[in-house]
Image (cartoon, rainbow over all chains, first blue to last red; front, side, top):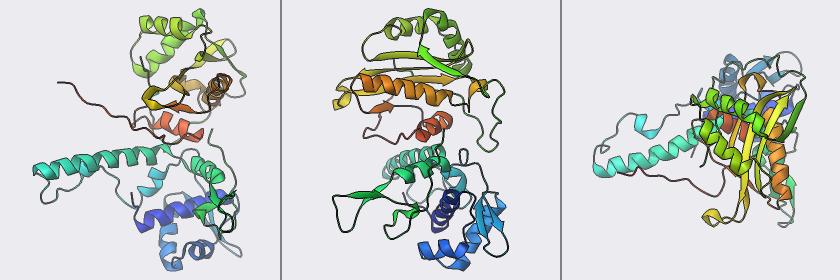
Length: 167
Length: 169
């Protein structure tokens, strides 16, 4: 499963903002952390703001703040704003789809898509924050040990996530 | 006799306010009694559209006692049953070491968003721990976003098994 670039960036931005709680997150922080251009990120954040998922905070120290209900907003809700999530068999027909091999392949791809969509629909932002809080990665210097990490699972990234249980 | 966890789904875009019936109410979780069956049947019928009294009597006979590893619990607020959960420890099915299976859960719509489901799952999990298992497992329809989301919020993730089925001709 590979998300389109904007979908992935939107999810990471939403998680950064949700993990920050009431504190607003500067767009350049997210851009730097994930190695994307501020211009590209601005478009994604603007889409998220239009959807009411984040809100723009103006002025010195401004940025973006999570504005949705973390226990209700799902990954599917966010991804769906940037790409179409439909099972393979519901998409435009491609050449060869009516052949036996094409139909068999479409059936398998559709099964995978349906499971992926159900998964995205069932995971809320609050649940993601809880998963993030549980994430452990081995220390670079000591593969046997582990530690918790923040958004992005980048060991070089300082953690600032906070636990937010979903129920 | 697997009864998948179930509940009606509803749109996620407009979360309902916490219902007055659940706000601030004390939730008690206890083993089901025979007198609870009417409420359980009604809860199930509300969710599934089918009233299955004979089925639930059978479930109660099998799970309502103190049989080791089997649990049939209800949650009540005041004296009203607002939810139930059923599960049992199953050994070595599908090659799996003993684990706790949850195969039925429901919470009355008026009592949702108040922690009833969490209390039920916590209680059955405690029972499974006492029975010596360290893994809890369930299975449900992939379009049941509401209950899937609930279990996800409780820390459950996709397990190492994939359900398969086939229509018998």
